[in-house]
Length: 336
Image (cartoon, rainbow, N blue to C red; front, side, top):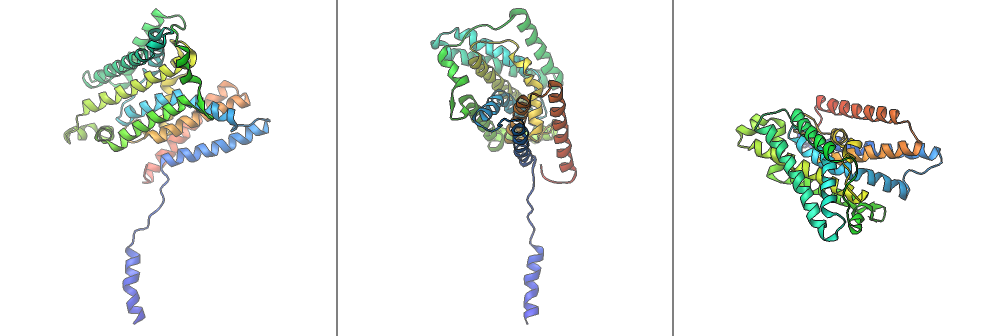
């Protein structure tokens, strides 16, 4: 009797699916960040320093702020299968627009910020229309816009220009504990874009367009509108990054974006975060993890006084290793 009674129970257990914990790229990037912090703390400690004291944490977060703003915007266009190479020059242009509009007057802070963001949105609109209406490749289209912006900056500026009011500089320097106010702003913008990607119809459509734009179009998605929207959001976050740098520097600087390489750095952060350049995969949370990895690497290298050439080699190895790891996950059928 007992043996017969046990059969249904065994059958039920046999058909119950086994849930396995999946290590996604987002989890992977934060595990890598934790490992990097541990290894970096050991290496810096061996040299008599401390990586994660208040100054070290402040340094990492400060390095993350501007790159993070640019990278979360870059995430939006990469998810749709596009990209934006004009962001570095746009950062410099918007820092100048904000600083020259403010001209040291507190009453012009709001107009200066709004005008800088409007200029950025207009550039994003141009990028989006060139890609969708003129059917230009995103790489070529945004590179062309970048060259136009570079020509304008080189013709009109030889150095810093404009000035921001002293009160506005608090955005660049003030902090709450070890966390800079500008880093909190970056996290706030990141949270807003995460919500847009994961909780709105437009976000779902961005993933659909990145996965297969033709299938998305046949399904009723307005692909042109989605791509243009993604480029406007990307450009606007780059413009906001320029405003933050103007607050930090006290003036506008034409080459502050290109000197830091925010175009390629932002793409690297998005890829480290698990995005696929072909589109359809990626997210803001992973991108912020990628930004923190790059900022932590720079902080460790500075503490160890590492040769700049070796810095680039290590960063390149990290990026290639991350891409190879994510590709292996996809080939093995694991969720990404």
